[in-house]
Length: 77
Image (cartoon, rainbow, N blue to C red):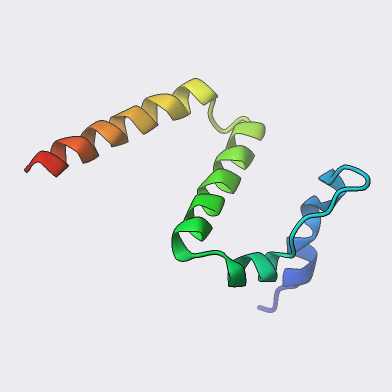
């Protein structure tokens, strides 16, 4: 099944304030490091999930704390 990636990448452009610009998606992918791309992805996903009411900021913080505790515990071993 073919998809139109141009339409999808432009969906949020109407949210850009008048007179402001936003980096092109393909340019961002090309210029960011792998870690920066991961951070941008997590930021975007979290922002969308919060805005759409999938979870609250408090629920996110709780899950974040649980994950952090597990990672720190595993780091000691």
